[in-house]
Image (cartoon, rainbow, N blue to C red; front, side, top):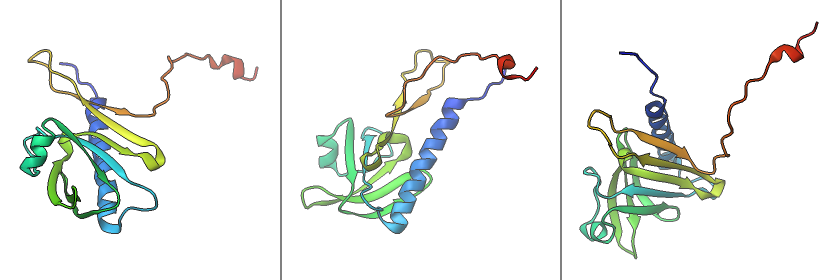
Length: 152
């Protein structure tokens, strides 16, 4: 069987590592400047922990905002826990990185989207694609001859 480089999986792990690093820095030092995050996650993920009333209100996905009021932000290799305020009700949550769908910092127009593709064939592995939002349009590659630049 031919070996190949799984760029999709490598990129997936790298982007989750990026989010882990950003959240760890915020846990240690707070949010710098105008930075704030909109994080959308899959509430059906088995490792998500949140109040029952929130799961009832957001049965499939939820977007949380980390900005003005949050506490107890703790980041691990698997995900993060945080207490957020919902109408003057502090609620602790645990959100695994595998449940993330989007991570956006609108203060600097940065965003990531994690898309899970449905499995068409039982032999295929589940594959997560990462799409960087605000990405410039991709152009087709063009082969350029270097002969025109060579000195004769």
